[in-house]
Length: 135
Image (cartoon, rainbow, N blue to C red; front, side):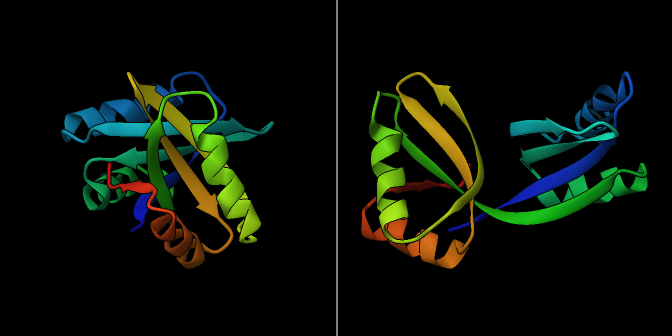
């Protein structure tokens, strides 16, 4: 099972991230997870939200460049080595992780991954009984 991730291109200027979060708040759209990467000229905010379609609509209306990407979110115990076991299984099956980000909540960790072959990744995660999360 996959989920939709928003990738939003942001100018590197003071307050731009705040502009985006205010828009999402105005429309009652909750941010479940995010990651920020930056270059000299712009940043890329990768974002998992409560209402993907509405978020895309309102952000585009406000002139943000938004792309959608399928990603997988897995849940694993928040203990040393649990993620390593999952990543070992994926690597042994020739699944390359292009990028990932994670957040922990108590005894559970959630990891958002973007693999090179999403269908094969989901199949392998299902085969090894990994908990795939819908967030």
